[in-house]
Length: 194
Image (cartoon, rainbow, N blue to C red; front, side, top):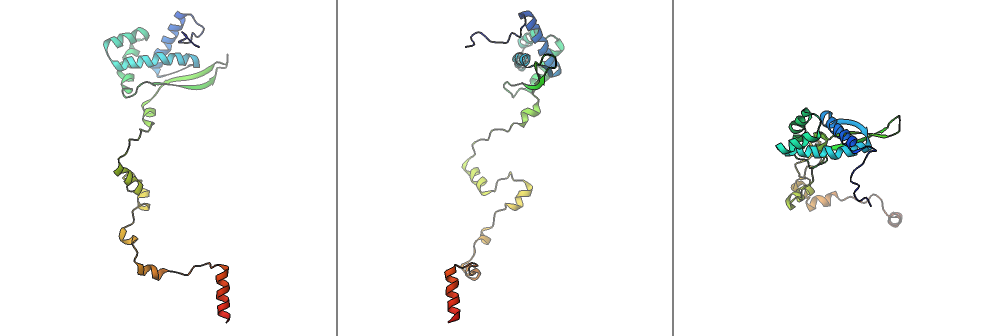
């Protein structure tokens, strides 16, 4: 069990670790992308997400809390004025970690930690709402308005008048079957000979 093991120590003293993470978060919010090791990225992500949440609050108290962690005043201003408004409709998940490979010197796994852009957030498809019975029936018949232009001609509904065929036309169009069973062929041949 991992009781009281809430974070990664990263083999550093507490003062070194806190300054290093503060610097990384500041760089992330300033440049919107940093390259670091995977373990550091996972720790920085925690702090960066909190900073963006503070930016979304927008209060003076939140601004002072962010300023106590971030190392540059310009980054605090950018956080509250530019970055936080991007994520007003998003509840968490403001960053992503992209693994890059391994560092040449010591083989440490490297990753990019970056802010999620609006384009990636918009690509997600909205959940479908439960459709009413009327719209479900229309969708089954193929008369929904969301058809593509090329498909409209192929799926136009057939008029009922054309679909209804009179009994007389059916009798006229009846054709003898193309392939007859072997017994029928023998009977026809024997009938012709006699």
